[in-house]
Length: 312
Ligand code: NDP
Image (cartoon, rainbow, N blue to C red):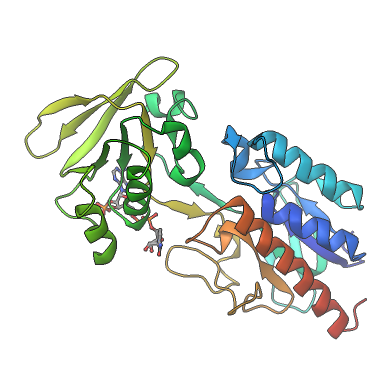
C-alpha cells in the first residue's frame, strides 16, 4: 500500500469518523477508515441516546454506531479494525503506520480519534458505569429527572453539568476536592446562585454504593476525615477529558491539554491536507451530533483540497 497514496484516510470510528467516511465515500475519495482500539468510540459505552436527531424513539449508543458503520460501508468505505500508532506529516504525502508496522500513505488524513472521559478509578465506579454512573450529564441527565444526584469535579465541566442537572433534579451535590473551584468565575457564580446545588468542599468520593444501580455515595472530607453517605441515585464524573491525540503531538498545533487546533470555521490543522473533527478538536460541545457535523466538514474540506492540488 506504501507505493500508491490513498486519497483519504480517516482515523477513528465515532460519529465524526463515520460521517467523514460517508461524505468522502460519496465523493469518490475511496476512504479507508481505521477504527482504532474501540470501534464506535465513546458511544459504545452509552446506553440510550435520545438527543440525536432522526431517532424519535431513541437508540442505544452501540446500535447507532452500527447504523453509522453500515452507512459508511454502503458507499464503499474500507473499514480496517486496526490502530494507527505513528504518523509522519513532514511531506506532502502523509505517512501513517498501523500497530502491526504496515506503512500507509495518504494525500489527506482526517483525524477523528475522539477523547476519553477521565474517571476516578474506583472499583465501584467501573462496576456501576451506565447503571447510574455517567460521565455526561447532557447525555444521561434526563434519566435522573426527579432524583437526587452527585457531580464530582471543580472545573467548568462540573459546573456546567451541575447547573444542567439542577434543572432536572431536586438536589445536586457537587463534590469538590479542594476548598475552591477551578471553573471560571461566571460558572462558579451560576453554581453558587442555584439553590438546589449543594457544594461539598474538600470532599472526595470514597465508594459508590449499590449492586446493580447507584443507591448512594460515601464521601470523605479530606481535611477533617469525616465520612457520610449521600443518598444519590446518579453519580456524574466531570473531572475532565483527555483527547486521544498523543501520536500527533510532534506535528500538529494543540492547546495545552492536547486538543488539536483547527482554523476558524474549518477543520484544517496547521498541516496541509490534515483535518481534525469531533472531540479530538472540540472541548466545548462534545456531542455526537456536533462531532458528526465536523466530520462532514472535514470530508468536504479534504475533497476541496484534493481538487485544488489536482490530486483527483
Ligand atoms: P478541568 O481540568 O478544567 O477540571 C477538572 C476538575 O476536576 C478540577 O476541578 C480538578 O480538581 C477535578 N479533578 C481532577 N481529578 C480529580 C479527582 N481524581 N478527584 C476529584 N476531582 C478531580 O476539566 P474540565 O473538563 O472542567 O474543563 C476542561 C477544559 O474545557 C477547560 O479549559 C474548561 O474551561 C473547558 N470547558 C469550557 C466550557 C465552556 O466554555 N462552556 C465547558 C466545559 C469545559 P483540581 O482543581 O483540584 O485539580
